[in-house]
Length: 402
Image 1: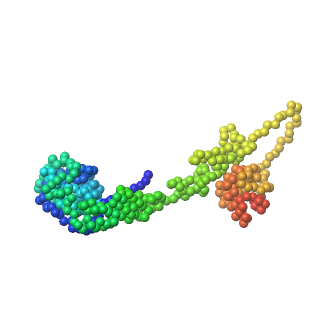
Image 2: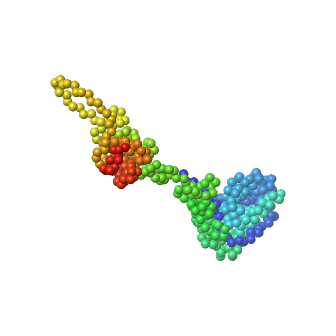
Image 3: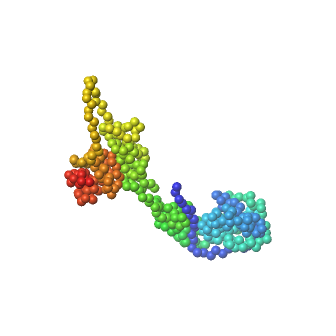
């Protein structure tokens, strides 16, 4: 699951201009406030007696900071510092509007540049000192557009300095400068969303119009203040870390012992010697079969030698003397290399397995596979021989002395 953080967007940037109110307390006393909400204007409070629940001065009513439509909810649509509909964003394109009891537009509630308006902080002070109760009938009213008034022409007054000095990556809207899509305000300039994210969370982050993300292989720290590299786990030999998991290299499978082994070595872990393996479907391990001259035992847990039955003559024969067998050491008498199998390969693997620094896998399978080849090279390196990976005369002589 991808981790993201909300990126506060400041959509409009302007040079510094005075934010003085053009409306007084007496001109807005008791009047309703409407906020822009998806193509219509809805009632969000009033400038009135603090004991009236509609008043923005009422901490338990319209002025409750936890109410989604309150101008005091800094995470809401009308109270956030960067929201385009906020009463506290100097550059908001649609700040709240003030409507009188005749349903006429009076002005904007904003800290910004739209006129006519009353500064948001001044309006709050007006509400705290008001004795007038707002009209409750206004709660059920919505407007599809800003209603007309005798003093409102629809565009408001726009200082000439604003329309002619929009920074790069922004456009004039007639009421201010708006950062273009994909850009956000940073002081008096518009920068890309990714640049804004990188200023907050470091170079390993990027963003869009709504969120900040960490780059692939990075994640947010616990305090959500920067992106840092995800720790890479230690993977077994013959594997690499890919897409948040350890994946065995080509030609190797993940064995039940947690190692990446060749299919034959993987089969040896499960069934012992005289077994041959081939790669199965991805993630399904190895396909195991018995080597030539061997077959599965009754419960398919090991490969045993094929028993050859000779015909018995009809006439009576003397019993053959019993033979005494011993597990005498099998000396290596021939050159051994990758792909070979047999008793001498078994003897080679037993000798190598006595030294874990040479043959850490310690597999005694009777088959000369990649693991055995690596062990032979390690043995040759340890004793100062040329590291050829097969058993020649010099290597054989040293092995037979072990």
